[in-house]
Length: 166
Image 1 (cartoon, rainbow, N blue to C red):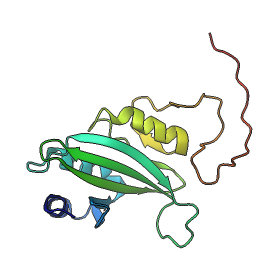
Image 2: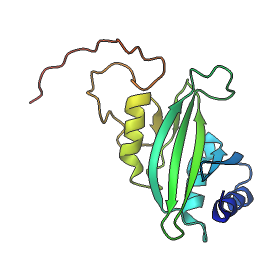
Image 3: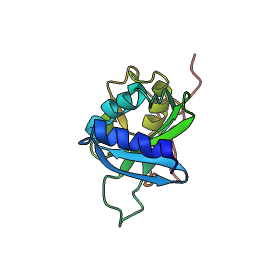
Image 4: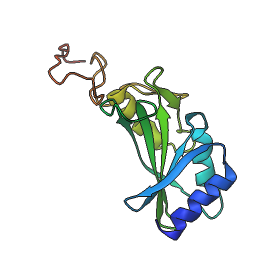
């Protein structure tokens, strides 16, 4: 991990120690695993803290760990990929999400660009984002049943046919 990544993780641990569950580095990116109830607070801190200034949410995605029986922790993770355009550094923030209820707070108030990213995760994984301004399907039609990127979604499943909309 580079010096900035180490410094960013140290600043996060110093600023919000009870919100950070773990930190590590893989593939050149610093990673913080945070308490799901504190994720918006953590993201806002990383955006606003002088010297950190992670001003871009470059991606938001989810991971389904259903097929990893030896893994401890919740079934899902929501992963936030942050970029500091001032310092040209990246940081990954992960928050666990249980299967029931599969929900976490929305970060649209922190980064408006999260709007469609959260809708995509909702559509494909079924993870709900509390306080999202318009949480509805983005890629699939409303009558589509299930969430196709979940590991337990049957690949042979047939979906209802929907006629053209006027």
